[in-house]
Amino acid sequence: MPRNFTNRGINDVKLNMGKAWSDATGLFGANRDTIFAVAGLFFFLPYLALAIFAPEAVNPTPVDAPPGTDPDVVMQAAMDAFTQQYADNWPYFLIVTIVQFIGTLSLLALLTDRGRPTVGEALQQGVRSVLPYIAAQLLIVLAIALIIAVPVGILSAISPPVAGLVGFLMVIVAIYIFVKFALVSPVIAIEGELNPIKAMRRSWGLTKGNSLRLFGFMALLVIAIGVVSLLVTLVLGTVFAAFNASIAAIGNGVVSAIINAVIAVLFLCVLAAVHRQLAGPSNEATAETFE
Image (cartoon, rainbow, N blue to C red; front, top):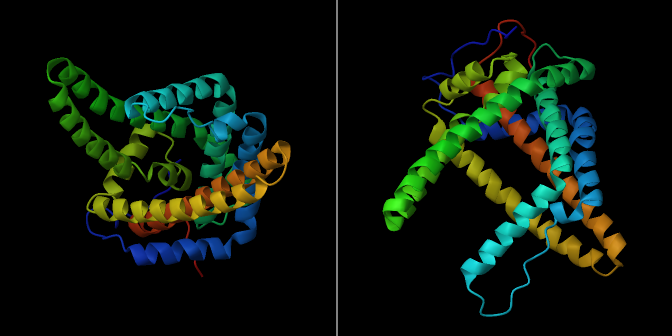
């Protein structure tokens, strides 16, 4: 059954990004060993296996186009290659995605439930919650796809320039929807809400009045992580390039898997902290997570 959380975060609490970050780092520091174990099992190892068995899916081969080629042609070729790689490796992606979904929900339940669940109980919550979480994600993707595809598709047949402008506006709307549903995973994992529609409604309510702050927080986080990840990948990629192809592939796979695990853990700690700040304490569990 869903846990009974207070509604203090709806309408009247403004997200404090500084506090959210300090709480997130506090969560990580207080649960470092458990986080490493769960992240290694659900994020590092699956991604490493994907990098080893389907390296072209993790590190796509750049499009080889002669100088002076039309950028639109290069972009289309890259998109075709990307689509083909996913089509060829979809079973691997499906397995890794489901495993990481379970890891996401398990880690959230483990970090933020004030009842201090054991690792086994958190894993059970992750497995029990994965189908509602998948259903919610599919509904979100469907909603965003309809918002973008339908208007742009209709307008493309009438006026391509107008379709381009509307498409840009629809992307902004899609980002807004993504932010509004950003707390679906903690609502499902922490509050125990297994109805995907209710979980989406709850996330929408929790983010009310805080959407812009949450977007800014997540955008800054993405930029910072992206820059650091790019630098690490370039430096270590250059080092591995000095070895033979097999060693380089394994080394790059390990680096990619580590980066994937670190990014996942960081975002989950942030989501847990944001949810705790906006949702308020659970009335069923009073133990303080950040003591």
